Length: 465
Image (cartoon, rainbow, N blue to C red; front, side, top):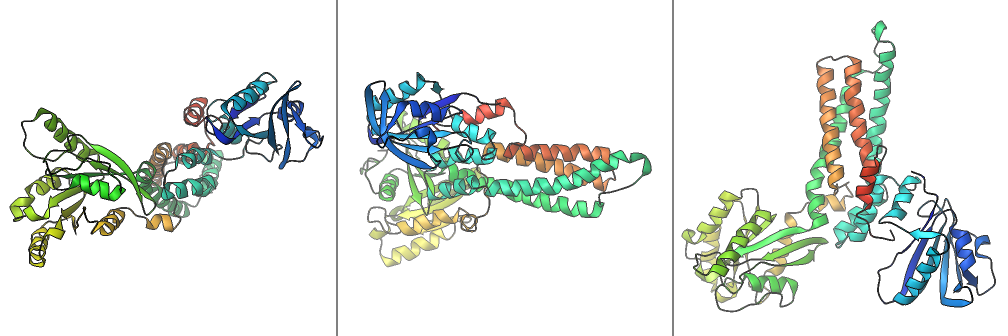
């Protein structure tokens, strides 16, 4: 898919700002830019060295549009692998529009979504997984998401996949060679060594697949539903966590009738907190709708925080709703937090703890949302549900659904090869499954692509990237 035209797009956000950045790429970029740029020192832009910056004016005939800085990146040492010009102009939307239109009239066309990165991929500047990491990096809104995207963009994930493909390819070539001597009953590929390799590849694939559970929540945020009876302090807890009056708080039970969501970064991980309507029997139609939505949010949450009013926990019978949630959602991480403990005596606290200790498979906390007591312990408890050790250890973490599905298919083919060796299948049958495993691994890095796949990936990019 060769590109022989020149593209232009605004690379900075649209709107008024101090400066704006306009990016141009293509075979005629230098000639077009040189014809529209007048250097303050009289230099010919087309004759300047790569990776240099030049001050001058963008002109439309005798009309000066703006005083700008032009950065030069010559092929092949540029982001796209083509000649690239970046124009830093003043951030007036009018100026931006005039400069872009000027280049459009002089041999450029408007870039499509992600076209600069697509050209970088097609010109061998990055593989497909690295290109996808560019979009993840732009979208990253937490330290953890940023860290994973940077690692992938620098080739960490690609290196793991390429190493697996190379080792598998070496044995695949020996298996294929056996097919040329099928009539002589010879084996070039040591089956025992091959089995060891397949075990190793299976373990690596399984680790990458398992990492997706962590990667997915880091990329999208971990949904945390705050539930409980009315007036136990759910909205107060949300406000205390966010340090703002996000939800209405009152002494009237049933104040919250709909779900309220907001996001907070804790230890570099994004948590999406959902304040819900209090769970109780009601004849109020609107409140009943809110309670129904509460139950839906419990379904969607990764972590359920069941908030209790510490003053109203009189015995194990007070915990029946918690038991019902555990029975219906045994896979959910559960935190049981007793709120308003500042209103209890030490003796009452001890009695409360004794009752709460009867809850199995849940984290137990005491806090006062209104006074901010126990909030740090609450945040640390949430972090315990996330395997942040994988982040600090720079392990490869899969965050992309496409990669995850390709890894699953590759593992399935590897399992078929292992079974084939155990059953002493012929080389030609083993070769079929090996080729399929290589195909699925190649899908991740872009060794194997289709126009539809590329179109789907890059259509999700922003214009100008």
